[in-house]
Image (cartoon, rainbow, N blue to C red; front, side, top):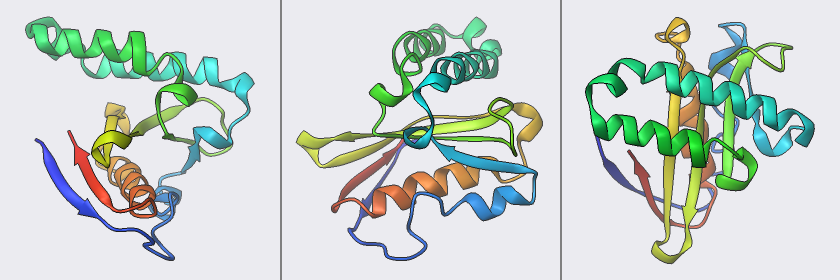
Length: 155
């Protein structure tokens, strides 16, 4: 599914990057922005995200070459260095735990086309149906709304 939507600047209160957090609190989860985490914890977080992404798409990867290629690219490139490859990246995780990732999503600004792309949304199977993906997308869209006007692509 590919969706293109116009986003405006200055969404105001509620349009912040943490707008999905309230929904997660009911599930015993919290959300962290990678830009606020200590750099020492990023390597292990990156490794955990790579495992989750690979596992989430393992069945489809075994059947479809384009999915296998997408997963290989995500693991080798995007998820290798989270702070460098995304303009912002959110992780939903168990409260008080540095690990125990339930899901994640990143955004990338493409300046030359005035576009923001939501990338690598992934929620572990045991956390699906609890609003984790919705909270992650809500945070990414809120972040995008606070940026200058342009286009938001959700792939």
